Length: 144
Image (cartoon, rainbow, N blue to C red; front, side, top):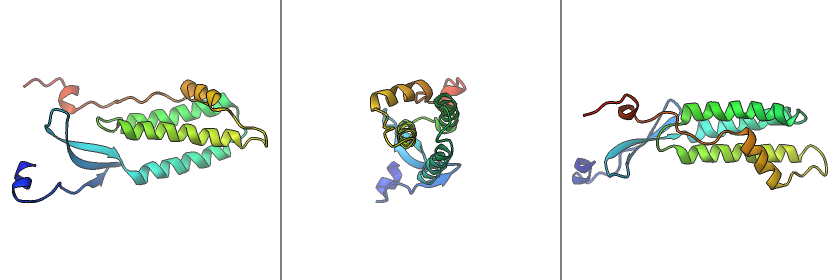
């Protein structure tokens, strides 16, 4: 990064690989790191897929849909749960809860679900955001 600055060049360009957008960044300590964020295209595709499936499961029972959503959100977190991607994971969980609320509100003409009840459903069925993959040096216990 310092040599690029001396040459008058800016930050290196980003690139997409394996579902992540790779960006050059810095840790809180000021050291260089590669920031991996969920690709926008993949996130939107998954949201559309979940939306369609929720619409198909409109009249299924809440526990049945809740278990399915738990597996979807959990699988997303297990793949995309890398350091510095926590904001994207929070957004995904929030948007899934929002979509679920919209679908439940369409069950009948007076079927609006208050947000306090919806928050309880989200808290019960959707897993909390968690980083599953630590940095390789920390994960493998390398001491230098």
